[in-house]
Length: 329
Image 1 (cartoon, rainbow, N blue to C red):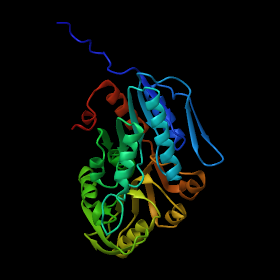
Image 2 (image 1 turned 30 degrees about the vertical axis):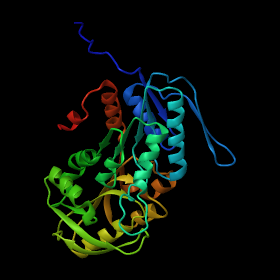
Image 3 (image 1 turned 90 degrees about the horizontal axis):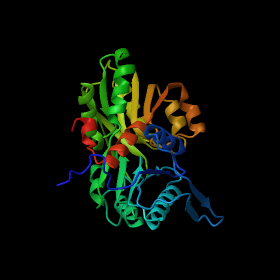
Image 4 (image 1 turned 180 degrees about the horizontal axis):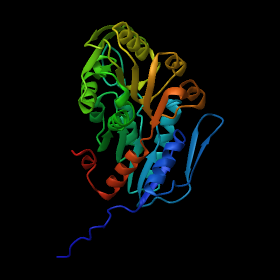
């Protein structure tokens, strides 16, 4: 019998395509892989219809489409769907949707009568458009993985945040404690605290109505005379963070740090965060932060790039190697 050569590839080479939502992140992933971004045209017609044309053939290739689905959400989502379908119609061998932030993650269950499960709809749309695989980071709820019928890599940026805290902030902290903004994030916060070898506390809050506002009620745990690291998966309007900072301060916390993955920062949230007594903010570039919002936060924010993480996962997926090995799993 002939042995299969170790470097034999089922697919052709890697082809990277970038949507228009996060060009800087796409370029960093391209630089990490040493694989250029492929040419494409994305045109918005006057009637708001989106037109995509590939600048080169992808027949038989292993294609990765990098597009985050932050604001403008529906435009960015449609652009991703149209780009995937364009690649499918040009006979790409395999198409992977690389979506650092996946929209509609909060609409993950019927928690009241007569409401949709939009996260599942988004998953099905990606598959119908032609995605064979997907990659995303820190979805709002774990069950979103079950909405996809195609395989995917659901990653977390928590180790990037933890490594940064350990390397740059930990030494200056006094008796630190990790605080979850709500009980829904309790398990992830507990894991975050365990990786930092720190105790954990939780804020209990109850939502009323369907708006983004929520009422923080009580603190479970001890923060008195301690520095606090507030953790969450995303910051949208900043309401939960404002309440969390108030609660820990009322309970005697010293310096307050904020760590989260997705900087949605809708409306005036960047301004709201800038007015809070936060010692430092640590986040990632899954969602690009516009210049006018960065101007509010620049003095005490660190934005860590997920480019090398996604780049390495793309490389391993292309070569058919384990992604879990990266995290000792």
